Image (cartoon, rainbow, N blue to C red; front, side):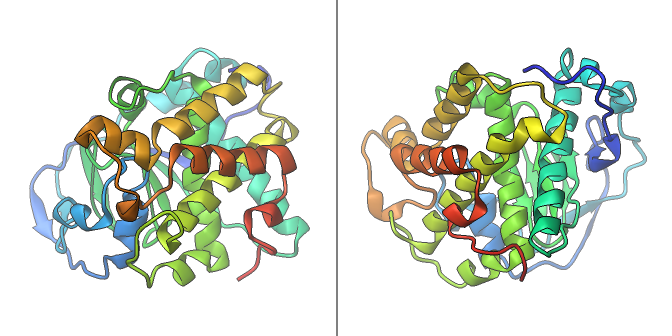
Amino acid sequence: MPFNDRSRLDTSQVDDRRGRGLGTTVAVGGGGLGLVILVVALLLGLNPADLANVIAPAPAASTGSASPTDNLAACQTGADANTREDCRIVGFVDSIQAFWTDEFARQGGQYLLAKTVLFTGSTQSACGSATAEVGPFYCPADQEVYLDLDFFNELQTRFGAQGGAFAEAYVLAHEYGHHVQDLTGALDKAGGSSATGPQSASVQTELQADCLAGVWAYHATDTGYLTQVTDAEIAQSLDAAAAVGDDRIQRQTQGYVSPESWTHGSSAQRQQALKNGLQTGDPASCGMPGLTP
């Protein structure tokens, strides 16, 4: 993935908790999991109800003394993003948020930066325990994205994706699509329904986030962080979108497809939503006419 060697990376947008264990835990009040479960199910093809056992109503907070790794100190420029995966994540986050900052301002709104939290194994979020098993997710309660980098290996080994740097970019841009939905009130509108199926609010929310990921990709080079986005890289993102389609995951895990239980959309739906954003570069084409609440 070619980054501009001279672009300056802003590591303050990424919280590196890798190597920090949960340590001794204390109870923290939880609850209100309807929307959280809907969003956290992202990319794993799970039923939202199944996550009730993963995200506990009373999550644990760390009181351990371990300090986070300082690996991101080496992520200074686009040249570093071209050689290191964690620096590449910083570069993608910087680019995605630079685009949405400008786009919100262009439409008379205000974009609020959302950190990406890198962790290993598990960490604490305002939505409960973030674990490698849950996968990447956006937490509306603290407006942060949670990511264990091992997920990208799982995307290939478990879900059969081809992988590649722009597959990673798609995953991050999708999560930030949820942040855009949160800022505009779209998540609140979708959070009251527990219905599933190809046309459900849950699926439409996920497809809109896919489309918004494509909108960023359309404008990615305009942010100054990326020098180009090739057809091969676009293919990586489309392949990743297909790999996490509900129908494909169901076929792999249970041997048959049950559309009535879909929460994220089929491979075809997800690819089409991403293509829509990629081809238009316009949030309105994703069913988001304005970037204000």
